Amino acid sequence: MATPDPVPQGTGETLNAAPLPNPFPREPFRKALHDLAGLGLYLGTSSWKYAGWIDQLYTRDRYVYRGRFAETRFERLCLAEYAEVFPTVCVDAAYYQFPTPRFLEGLAAQVPAHFQFTFKVTDEITVRRFPQLPRFGARAGQLNPHFLDADRFTSGFLAPCEPFRSQIGVLIFEFSRFYPADFARGRDFVEALDGFLSRLPAGWRYGVEIRNPTFLHPDYFGMLARHGVAHVFNSWEAMPALAEQFGLAETQPAAGHGAARLLLRPGRAYEDAVKAFAPYNQLRDAYPEGRAAAANYIRRVVLRTPGLPRSIYLYVNNRFEGNALVTLRELLREAGWLKD
Image 1 (cartoon, one colour):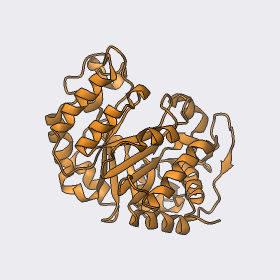
Image 2: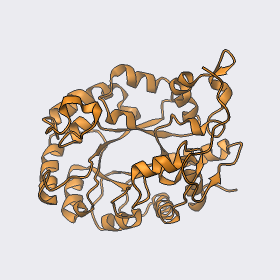
Image 3: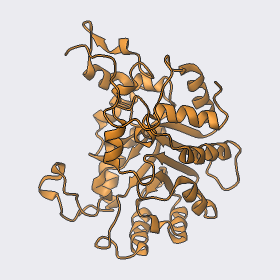
């Protein structure tokens, strides 16, 4: 494998580019993140294997083998360096297949005992009809017989996670956007989800992330609260802005834990963000409104605002602004936890 050139700039349009300072301010950043974790607020990123973070968060020399940078070595080992700075990460890979004991053991072996993993639950549980994608093979376009199957979730997902329960933050049920052919009314989804959640084993932190803005109804929030399940606030293409979602949930009962994911600027398609922002080595389109809403949420959590959960997990995706490290750095600054 040839030694790569310095990490290239993205191929898409640079909208409001802001490079990350080099060297990355690891120690003040790490201290702020761990101080907040001590208050019950865990901040991290969605996944971690990004070559665009080399020479920022990641030290290139750690992944050199026989004089050359080894991509496979980087992908296999970089979680350990990530965990030197961050207290948590969202494992997106679990969405595509059920986690195996070997996979989970490999993750846990690279992090300290207090590190927290949040997992997206495998889509076999959350997809009503399999999408027309090659990875689904003959199942593409077919109804999913294991949609909201509590037994399948318990045996296929919770069972391998059990030995690592103390290191698991939130288990997120991410539901793609439903159409009338899936659920004629939002209340039908709430009823189906109610039945599913009632059958889940207790003692885990569960979260529900939806893509239908009309489902954000008091009946939905109330049903989640009855089960002790969090609504996962999410910045996404067709979802209301974070500030609006926080406002909708403000008067509703909350679970003992919470979660939020900064994924996309509303109105921007996922594919467009990938094209414009890859390889995610700098901020490319600042979204100050979304960042301000998240920073305000952080401040309110730290101040123990009544009604908010005691433990909260907040994750930032590179496709939110172009580089999750920059976004988190700026969030900490706006919230008063990181000084220049």
